[in-house]
Amino acid sequence: DAKTTQPPSMDCAEGRAANLPCNHSTISGNEYVYWYRQIHSQGPQYIIHGLKNNETNEMASLIITEDRKSSTLILPHATLRDTAVYYCIVRVVQNAGNMLTFGGGTRLMVKP
Amino acid sequence: NAGVTQTPKFRVLKTGQSMTLLCAQDMNHEYMYWYRQDPGMGLRLIHYSVGEGTTAKGEVPDGYNVSRLKKQNFLLGLESAAPSQTSVYFCASSWSTGRVGYTFGSGTRLTVV
Image 1 (tube, each protein chain N blue to C red):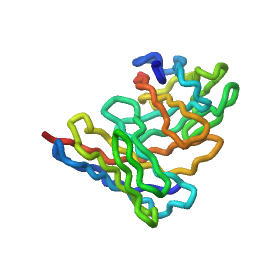
Image 2 (image 1 turned 45 degrees about the horizontal axis):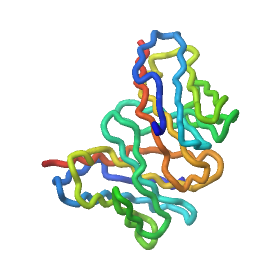
Image 3 (image 1 turned 90 degrees about the horizontal axis):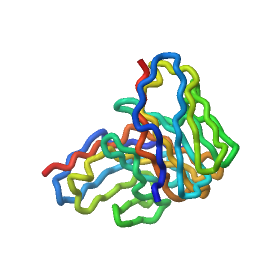
C-alpha cells in the first residue's frame, strides 16, 4: 500500500471550512483513498473514501487531484466536536485481509 | 443495533496473568480485526479474521492469540501479560468487499503492572 504524508497538526476556526491535505505520490491505479478520524479516547470513525472522482457525504467532501497524488478532506463548517486526529489511508481493496495501516495523522483543533 | 461492542472497557493485570478480550458485532460482517494503540501512536494490526474459524497474523502478533468460533465474535487472548502490552485495544469489523469503511469498537484500556 502507498505511503501517505499529512501535516502533524492544524487549527481551524469554528464555523469555517477545515481543509486537511494528504500526499500519496506513490499511489497506484487500484488504490483507494480512505479517511478516518479519532476523537479523543474513542475508536476510529470512518468518514469517506474515493478512487479518482470527488466524493461527498453528510460528513465531508473528498477532493482527489487529477494525477491522484494528493487529496484534501473538507469539513465544510467545522464545529468543536470535529476536534480529532484525522487519518488518510491509501490501500488496495483486496479480498483477503483488507488491512488498514494507520500512520500519525493530522491533529485538527477547532477553536471557538 | 449496537455495532461493535468490546468487553471489558478497562482492566488492570499483573505481569504473567492471562485474560481474554471479547469483541462482538451485530452487523453480520465477514471480517474482524484487533488493533492496539499506544500513547501518541497510530493503530497497529495484531490479528485479523476473514471468516468464522479462520485467523491470520497482522503487524504485531507476538504475545497474542485469537479465535473466531462464531461469526459475530472475535476473541483476543493474552496468555502471559507483559508491561509492553499496556495499550488501548480496538476491535473492528467490515464487509468483505472492502470498499466501505470499518466499524470500530470503543476500545479496551489495558494496563499491565
